Image (cartoon, rainbow over all chains, first blue to last red; front, side, top):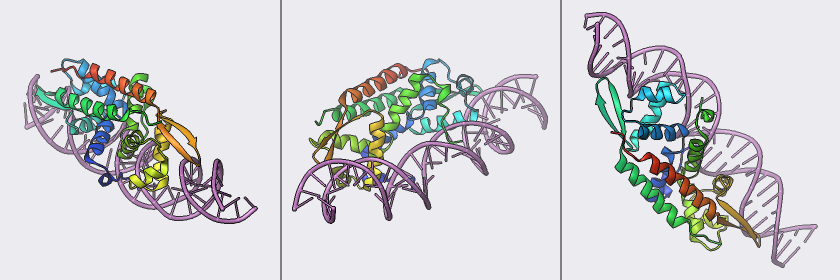
Length: 107
Length: 107
DNA sequence: ATTTAACATCGTAATATTGCAATAATACAA
DNA sequence: TTGTATTATTGCAATATTACGATGTTAAAT
């Protein structure tokens, strides 16, 4: 196989896994950190900062974007990628809600 | 390729990604939730609860275990898998530390 | 109109992940 | 010791992910 069986889990569990997946690659962790550290967030800047080719960065940005974590504003000829802070906050709250419920010991 | 280039990131970024990877599959999210909900956490119980074959559960448990999130105590003929709450707490704090720093808006 | 710069998409190779059947290992029970 | 129940490991097929070169696309500049 290789494909996850998503239909056997609750929506909440699939949602947590989907959120975690965004952060499960160091390039995406680094990209998000970099975007939040800059006033203007041009993709080419990221290529200079992170040692990956431009298509690879673009691909990771797509994953981050499809999770709803970006707000892209066109500014002149480059794109200003911004963090969608509300969505990011929502992700953090969902993760914490899951983790708080789960960290009660069993033995 | 297909392999992540780990050497181009800081240790902290790789650590966050490694933590997130544990939670990036719904089976592992479900297993952790289930383990924390039970007093005795036998693997066979998990197989009954989650619609995956025993080797698949065992494989996911291995990933969770290698991340340090389990304490396994032998109790009779079955294994009592317990959540390593300290480690789980540590993961939560590292994720929150990263996310709190990152969620400041840029635009 | 042509060029240039920034970013996206396509195609593809390399590698990782997921899932399970078959089998092995382990520990207790009879 | 022989069975039985529980968990781990192996091997393999299917799919996903990662990475990048080549090529498009878009918008401003010349």
